[in-house]
Every structure is written in C-alpha cells, then in structure tokens.
Length: 240
Image (cartoon, rainbow, N blue to C red; front, side):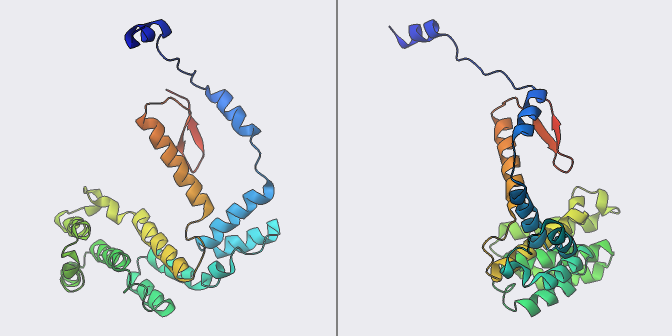
C-alpha cells in the first residue's frame, strides 16, 4: 500500500477536544501545593526582591525564618538602592552601589549603561536639556562604539527631546515607572550575584516566566487553551 493510500485509509489525525474553562479550573482546584512549600516560595520572593517589612511580617505569620543568609545580608542596602531608583535618584543609587560593591558597575558595563541611561531619562523628565546633552556627550557617547544595542537605546532616549510631550511619543515607555522598576530589578539581581546568592531570581518570578513562555509557545502553534490574560488578578480567558 502506498503512503498516499495509507493516509487516506487512516484518515486525518484526531485532534483532542479543547478543554472547557470550567473543567480546566476544576482540575486546577484539585492540584494541592503543600502550604509550607507555598510559604517558602512567597518568602523567597519577598526577601530576594527586597520587601523587608512584608518579609518580616510574613515570617511572623508563617513561622519561617528570613530566607537565605547571603540574600538578607545586604537587604537594607538593597532597599535603599531600590527606593532611590524608584524615586528617580539614579546618581544616589549609583553611589550606594559603589559603596556596597566598588567594582561591580565597572565590571558590568551594560548594567552601568542602564543606570546612566535612566539618569538621562530623569533629566529629560525634568526638561534639563543642557544637562542631558552634556551628560550624553561626556558619559555615554563613547559607549556606543562597537555596540549597536547601546547605540539604539541611546538614540531612543535622546529622541524624547524631539517631542513637546515625550510621554506620549513612540518612546514614551522609557518614561514609564516600569522602566525604573526594570533597572532596579537588574541592579538588585547583580548585587545578589555579587553576594554569592545561589539564585538571583526568585522562584516565583521563574514560575511566571515559565507560564508566559508556555503560553507564547501554545499561541505560536495556534493551540486553543484557557489563557491567563492578567497575572495580577489571575484572570483566565476561555479558549477561542
């Protein structure tokens, strides 16, 4: 029998039924995570990301010690650095990083550029144009040589100057608070690595990245499945 005849005889491959949202959620509810295991994941996230007050409160409620001696050792300083970046005080944050690990930024040119870029963004936010141009020329211009990624980011940043309302420009994402948060997260991870932490990314963050990756792969293959559309509220959309 030819391969064509065999294919006709067998017919097209069967496609599994798309799970209904109700059945999907029922299966999720049946999955039990040990309470202590879940508590450890939460504690790991709070300490790794530098939420000291929440970590201490959760420690009392759960009976768990603050996770990771090497992680909690620099907790106070990491909080100050994170808060400074969130407030747009990038040079203050840089000084604090240099006090904690004097060679860290010098040994990580990309991270140093991210901090300097954020400082440039803060100057643009405050419309301090002369300082923007001076800082870009003195501190950032030489970094673009042979590095197209840094050149692109510097061009995007300086392009904000061309708009009366840069927040509504095609490059407005740079002025969003999430950009500060991303820089703070990268600096925090680098400090943890310097401190010798076994993992610079919390288990919870890893799990969320895996979820987003898995959903992206399913979308590429046009697979129908109940999709989580909002991580913050754990909203799930029925298959379409």
